[in-house]
Amino acid sequence: MAVVNVHVRPALNQREVTLQPTRFFGTSDPASLKFWLTGIAFLALYSVLNKMTVYHQLDGLGITLWSPDNGLSLLLLTEGIIFAPFVLLGAVLTDVFVLRVDHSLYVTVAVELVLTVCYVSLAAILRHKLKFNPRGARLSNVVVLLIVVPVCTVLTSLLYCGVLYLGGALPADKLLMAMRHFWIGDTVGIIAIFSLATSVFAFLSKPGWHWSWYTFVSCSVFILGTCLGFAMLLGGGDGKQYHIFYPLFLPIIWVGIREGYAGVAVALFVIQLGLAAVTTYMGCDANDFNVFQTLMLVLTITGLLLGAVTTERRTTALLLREQRIELARVSAYGSAGAMGMALAHELSQPLSTVATYLHAARRLLQSGVASAPVMDVLSKAEAETRRTREVLERIRDFVSNGELDLKVVDMSALAQKIATLCREDAATHGVKVEIESVRPIPPVRADRIQIEQVLNNLVANAIDATSERLDARGRVIIRVAARGDSVVMQVEDNGPGVAPEIADRMFEAYQTTKPRGMGLGLHLTKEIVQKHAGRIWWEPDVPEGTRFVVELPIDGPDQNAA
Image (cartoon, rainbow, N blue to C red):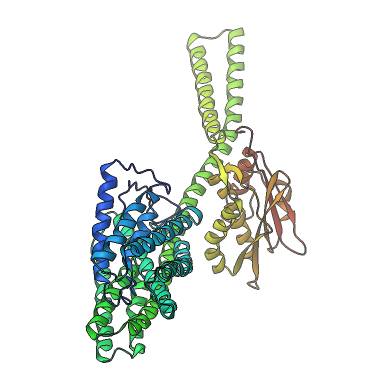
């Protein structure tokens, strides 16, 4: 395994380990001690894995039905092709001294050179083209691994066995059988090693991991189920009752549901080791073990997909909870900010009038006969009222003129996020929230949190409106589309529409028809849109309902507007 620099940083948008990998075309210095220690450690572990899989070798050709050593080679090459010499050296040495292949040294070097070139190409496809990350337990990574590896190993087996055939080490009548053995061995081995490595990375990324009762129960059930499965396999006698393998699916499904991707990867590796040991003890020949390995490939694909889906679902649920908390916090601050602006505006006017009256009173007293104490008190009152006004205006300026955190925002993804957050609450009111995105749209330069607040306010209002329907057919539609140099968001509902008494004052503060509403949501929404140099308006929908439209410039505001 390559030694890499590890940097763990918390991320809100994903619950997986985020490590800084070595760049594909190599940043490791061949003269560094780390490089050589990595290579030596790889050679040692490669030899151990090769020795574990020496059984069921096909006619002394170095082709086995389980090749985790080749999976280790590919894993190392995804860290950088600079390690290719170690991969070639390890393959040649183990062929000669561990597997003791029957063909000449020239043929051995030739086939392993071809194999190394194939692995370098596969590593380039995975890491450079498909952006595959062995440290990420995401469903997309698993799908890439399960599709690309079997396809590429077909070509690799053709080239490897073709060189053996051209070198005279492989007869023509065994070419297809050798290719089949090579394909199943490399496919299962590579997938097993990559998934195990991902599991190790995920385990190391968990701070303060401890053994829990939940984990103890999961491991106990897995061990019991696996032992029973292998006991049934041993009880089969001749090793040809392949259907006895199927009970091993049960512990894998159990671990996949309970522990997710990391747990099922370890479980699959344990079952593969047990299967190799049991079939060797039973004296199964290569053909029988080939059938078991084919079943093992099916089990691996099933388990990894189930584990990845479980992990992805848990990650999504955790992310949604955090985003709900974040939106609630932003809503609270937004409502408080709108109230602060309105309060400062309302209080500054009467205080200004008081200051004017006091000033006039002082002038009148100055023109007549007045005592010094009266003049002093009036001057102090005037100073205090002016100071109060300055404080309130500074609060208003702080709330209204805060700087925008402008970044590139994917409006379609933002709409999906808000819709996902609101669907659960909408469903309890018999309302469906849908999204219509006509075509891909360009990203917008905006403050993501504030635009989320805008869309969240509009969708929440739409849900409240449609929940008043008695037929439980409320519907809220979110549309996002490009229009010239702008992006337009529409929130449409089939509720009762806007009340006539507030139709003309929709976006003014404290205008609401809700019994417990404060009338600040749409006012705050308008303030945010205007700060982004955008427009917001509403229009009645036919035959029923309301449509709110927000138009934002793609390039964002030229400057932060109050």
